Picture 1 (tube, rainbow, N blue to C red):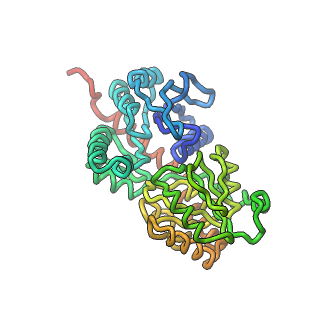
Picture 2: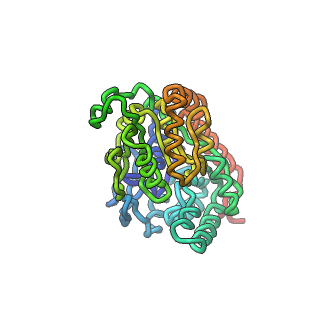
Picture 3: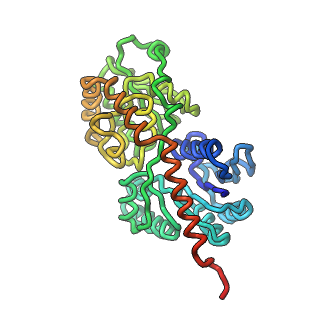
Length: 373
């Protein structure tokens, strides 16, 4: 089988989608004979030895994403690659090119809906824009053979948009890379902090829906006995003295080292459709303090962290205090155990393979779309 992943959400500072695609590629290479290709935007047309085909695409700011306007070029590339199954990771212009190519090749098209684009549009541009984006998303996802959501929350959101053929399939995490063994005893010394400082971390984008300002206000309230390490692609915020800003961590091993070496992970975002970085922190044996919103309650339980009222810096500060009162190490052990039981990458990938095989079986049983009488 030749599996082709197509997405515009592939940039140097992208988060969960890129880690999902690269982890999938590595897993398929180790465990199967499936040929896997990534068709993604780049600064020039190119092919890599690792199975990435780049299509020259306009760059967007500030996160380095590229907008694929030349849909015909994407369609031609897909037709030339001749995959047996196509998965699209967003509903951008290249997804319509993938749809056209899938119909021409008569192969299944699966959409993995990673983002709540309707809520993002509504929040940033208002209700009218949200309604337009919802109609657009509904028209695209209804045309796919199957839509995969990373959580029950996102499956329910798709149903609200009018998309019905949706399967919830949680992602997983590499429990060998993200592990308590990555803990580094000298992190506080590297940061120039006293040994008894209570240190927590946030890693991810600094976009509006991540509510970074809430985290900063919470740590202003917590004071100098608490310290926040933030890793991301630039901030644009006034940082309190008890916050250290690190650059975006391209290395999974370096991210795992930071996550395993702090006392816990904090996340104020209220629009998560899954929250892969939460799982990565939990796999490192760290408890999580996060907003009770989106898909987060599906991952963070009362045994593995603290959920707080969204958009409330005081509640976030209280949640951090509660984490320490309950014992970060004890909560962290339960967090690691939960990931090992329910969210390994091996289990997640085998579930996806089941969906792929089902889609291929359905495609082989149907009459070709363009068959002549």
